[in-house]
Image (cartoon, rainbow, N blue to C red; front, top):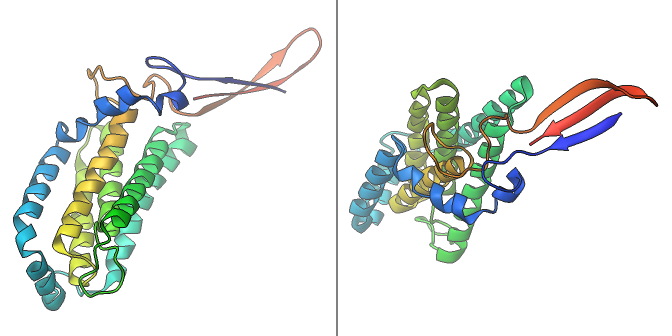
Length: 250
């Protein structure tokens, strides 16, 4: 058996090397503010978070007492957050197994990992105490960030594949996760607002670094002409031997 491999390039270097390209990541950073509806959500949630910041404790306290939209239990919100992130990975994994296209799985995995890394770094840096006391890891809300990142990644994958924006309805259960964190007394209003902003921005940034919309001349990590990691098996024969050749490209 002969093993062969190949790599693809949009500008220079392998796909792995382009993950560390500063021009690619800097060019992609503006995409969340240019693509709809992420743009409207970033400005809208950002504005509401700023307006509500002076009343942070009051909003959070009232929510924890009244339980207007949720029962104040963390289990439903926790399950939804995990489900949204898992759905983004599952969608990409299904495409990888079904069509040999690993791109959406890679984007989802990297997007969720980057979101979690950003959340942990900010928690460590801010050391904000939770509304009901206890741990100093309130800012930002990791559950909210993860839920909005999962919703963004899955919605972008669906849009890329079908040109449909129905996937953006996934922001509704992501919003429930944020409200649940406030009404359960786990986070302040601003923790949740910033968590949503962080999840949307990081996920869309990672997506934009990997893939560009039609007509967008930005450098990206993926060559859209080839589907991620692809495997091929074909027979070969020469003067000395014959058998199967296993190849892969990325």
